[in-house]
Image (cartoon, rainbow, N blue to C red; front, side, top):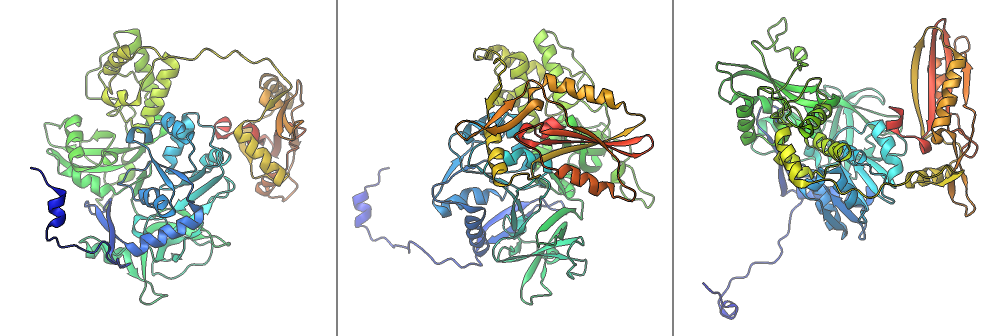
Length: 610
């Protein structure tokens, strides 16, 4: 039917107030996290906690009205609160990545190039960007949280933006409870509490522990949630009275940590069995409860184990009744009950699950077999394209066996990050254009080969001719930043990368020196120094020849070798003269030496040192 606006306006309509006062204690949102009893926990977060959190974030790390924030986080992850409401509170702009863009490193790289000022992501997503060849975005403020920030990743990120922040906090204390700006990869912490928040390190009886002594991280203040939705018994275990401040409450995180001498918090891991996979928090009991409800499953256990390419994967071990349920059937049933990240990548069927001497499940004895694979009969490739794809599948998944053309990439342990890497390898090795979506739609070699045949060859730009050797070259964006920092703090060791090798037996020092000279002759980077150009900006100066910096040392009697190594790492480089790498050989006993390699980050990165 039709509604005439004039008739509506003339009617006797009751008008409600446009705005009603909101009390800080009223519920702002309810968000579910994985539950240890097999049931997800609904966390009741109040308006007061959200407002306090946003005000603190506006101040530090800082959100300004002119900022453009790239939002990449799914709404089921509470850190999306900052990505959506933070810019809104500041009058900034939110650029929403699609679900496909958020898991595609190339797409994220293109989005960042469109003028983005801030991006928040888990370490896994930052690694996606790096794997896609992201060289950095000038002025970018990089926020990292959800998992521990590894030093190697921090070293990669620091020169690629203006600021790097490490964020820490559980859902139960309103997104982030502490933050730290990271200046050096070897000095990472969770930082200091945000506004109106207290972070304590307590023992099992909730007594404060001295600085440096590990204990449980307990959080109090404005961000502490109201509890768990309809789970008062669980809330009473985690939300406790603050013995130091009567009338206040603390949330017991279950995280191990310690307070450093300068007041910063360092997170050391978990006290319980809770797992983290690609930024998602996983309670094994929740997955086990869902798996136990599947037909034919008598007993089960789940855990994380290294799988494809050494990456951790969620694995399920099962004892079932005959006939054994198919993996595809179990996977389908679990997807009806759980989000994708809680569905195990691998299923291992056992006659009996291992037990300890006192009859309890022995989780440490649960292993992922080396020959884990598909239930399907092996079908060999029929065409050269299928043969190449089988090899690429096996390489991406870290498998030591041949992959059949009907095996599912994701059933073999693949996930979105590995899918992105596989798509990139297909483009580079086979010169075939592959949208990431195609791999999700056709996850087998046979299906993907058919899809690739329809998509056609990759339209590659003309090959770039090799540049002639020259004595100088401009700095990259990452090098420009490091050059600028060197001018501010000459001789700083903040960007020294190092690796230590233990050598046994007699070392031929002359052969080592010759090997270094051969490497320098082949790789111009090792003959590079950095100095000012005519316009005052930095430039790379590439020498035709340069002697390697190698020295043999012996610790003095009673000298602490660790302290000596630290001093050798911190020795400044002469940026303008080079070389920007050195070797130090320490003979610590007869037939045993330590070889220390130190390189300046301006000519190297974490991948180069690996």
